[in-house]
Image 1 (cartoon, one colour):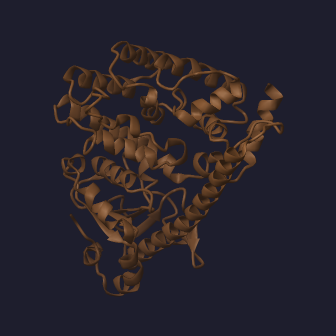
Image 2: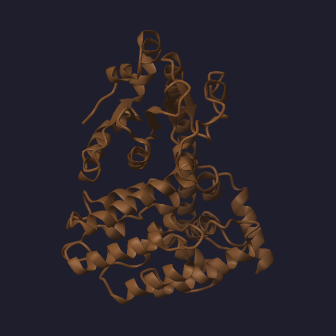
Image 3: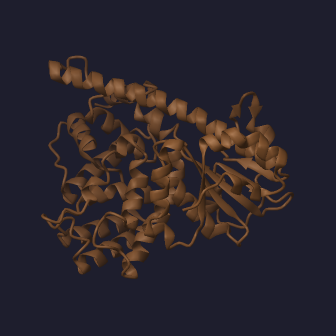
Length: 415
């Protein structure tokens, strides 16, 4: 089993289009998501405590969190479906049953504050004992982003991959089955940590690949004609997704370049996200345009690391005072950028800053819808947006005629 598993892991890691390479290690959105989702879960807890949590998934802070998770795509596609309110079935019973709602809120808060595996397991067992209709281990997708070295994500593809790899028959909707699966995953991961990661997203991605048949176990596997066609479609879709991702990365880089160029022309110190400073656009290296060192800001390490991942920041010259923050969004993500800017406002805001989303033109309606959500409005953080086309076409004029960051108001929109 060990040598065979090592071979499977190598195949998984060598495939440049596998979720290991396209989601786990080469996806800056995954890194940015952890703190944003954590902050979103804190909002869910606060809403339940203050009796502001609605009796429907739509429009709730929980919907915001789950959509931020599903923006991770691939491993987390469909993660929000179990939380949709199904009134005829009265599931999941956390919207209209106040006792269940409070129990769910307390569960999330206790998991947020948990420091050990034992504490989290205890909370899972306690939640399971309440037998809340429709609330099963789909919650693990949320817990993964709170404790990625303790809780693996869980969905149909992952459990199918688990059963195929370990010749088991685990079922989807049971916490007890999930905990058994988790034990095997952690033990397997521990034995192969040098090839995988302490972050359980790596082994979950492996099972996901097996469960969707993108990674076939053994050369003696026979696929029927419908299965073969399904696999071919999956591979074609993955290739198309990878190509789209490359195109969006190029657009993302271009927008960052325009923001760095404008900020510098306006007389600000500018800096790109810490993991983007090796990039360049049209021969212009971000490392030459950005500050050589991130300004000293009095924040805890975790928060500071998140702030450093903001796509572009403008600072008042020779100070640590942020004057403008920009998050460049792709065609598939909006929620996570809003969460990051909202989170940033809690940590550095003193009244002078402006926060912008830079968004694809075709997502304008969606941006307006999300910025109007009560879960965002109640935070009292004004986030404006700028369309890709506007930033691109007016970049040179903004550089030439602008005197301060207020020039961005000429192309920015608010809802």
